[in-house]
Image 1 (tube, rainbow, N blue to C red):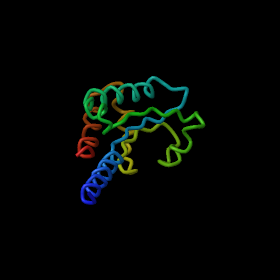
Image 2: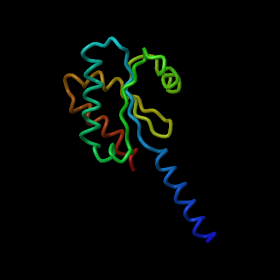
Image 3: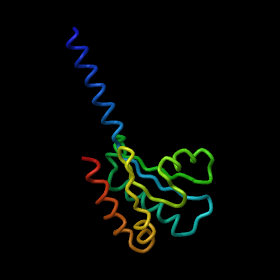
Image 4: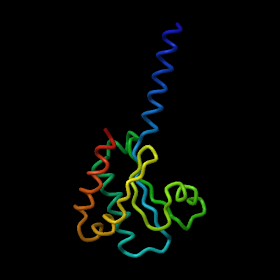
Length: 126
């Protein structure tokens, strides 16, 4: 009985650890945005939902747009030292900043943004 309980407890711990290591993609923005800012969010979200539909459903990856003008987003922005529009991929509290790529490619070369996101996210999901 003790052995079965220990195995059950270990299984719960392993599942908890795996759930904690999900990949999070954040797009931080302000309320008033230009066309490029809107495109970075739209393209990033589209790419994530297309390439990682199963992982989204399973909770292994998450995309969140965060409005920096909302008081409720201050804590998250402070945590990742965000003070402006930013596209971050985060796992284990370690951010990878793809802001520059997002702004360079979202409107005119979304396939390049897709490749950049994929290059960063695929290894993090393994």
